[in-house]
Length: 84
Image 1 (tube, rainbow, N blue to C red):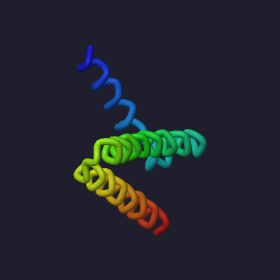
Image 2: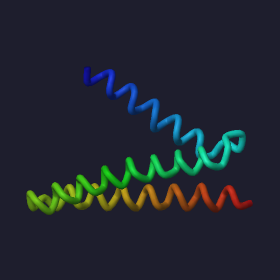
Image 3: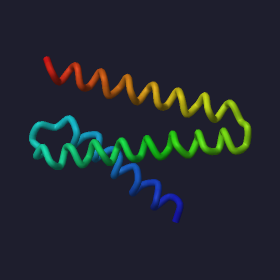
Image 4: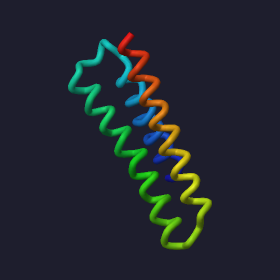
């Protein structure tokens, strides 16, 4: 059952990532896909930060910060490359 959820989740995230940058997809769907991706990464960072603070584990806070920074850099690179 775990494998099925992993496959479905991977398809959703990969499909959303592909839809965000594809000009053939309508703008409303691209925005919805971007919001979905932001919610997934935001939830992941939020859970890691919560667990790091609750359990006093600084490594979880560092991992959450790294994920947040990498996501922000990726969004920035995608945004600036699309404007050109």
